[in-house]
Image (cartoon, rainbow, N blue to C red; front, side, top):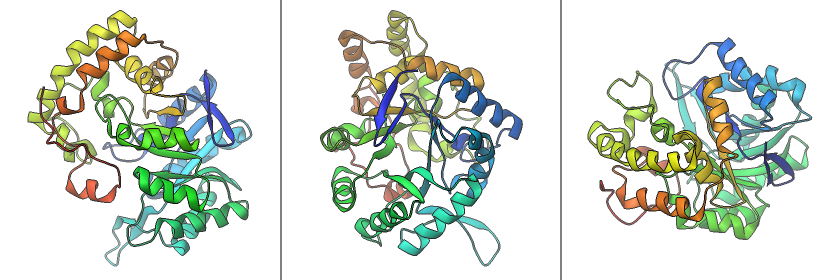
Length: 340
């Protein structure tokens, strides 16, 4: 596999997001299926694996830790703090954003135990808690690094201004945020800021939560617990309009001699040497398809065609509903999303 630089680490240009194994998309796959994907990724040369305290309220870290432990000297392991499950008085686990230093420290200790490791290579602030200056949260993470509990710092879903503030407090190795043909917010400032500051941009959902694969044609059948059912661009009317973009995309894929998923991964990686693609999957077949996308070469003409098809104003629906949008700090385009 081709590699790119992420802080002190040299990693595969296509990483594996592990969230799908236990979080966000309804019923989770079996342990055996999840482990099969992890082993396939290791065999294929993937060297960056991404999880978080939030995913499955800790279950995701416990799931992947034993598989990755024998390979710790050959991979880069990333996890996240600042958004985790907290059990209420009623016994129900709920997602809580908490960036206070004492909470981040406890998050880290819990993750180290679940992952079965002494150090987390890349540790992200999963969400910026607006009640806590980002400098305080990053400062505590810097202390965790000084103590040898983590090796590099990252932030997730922040805009360029907050990224610069965090980087001033302590060098940031990676920014993780959504970036794909139909989620272009990175181009409003964070992509350029990462290039300027020498920060890797880790692009999650590079295949648009399956939309850009062409394999999700009907959103009315999304299972209970699938977060896509709450996202405006997956609402039936918006999604029907968005599906119209796939036919011209398929024409470009045929010119490039690749699948839609491979094309989507390739496009992301062509947006700069600082970009790393972070797809997630529960299928070995889809994993290999994503990885192949990391080797597809696109001409300037094909890139221009894709940029024209997926103009931001052509996308129907925002990527998050109001609550989700309020929890992130990413820039938004200054127009109502409209169909082409």
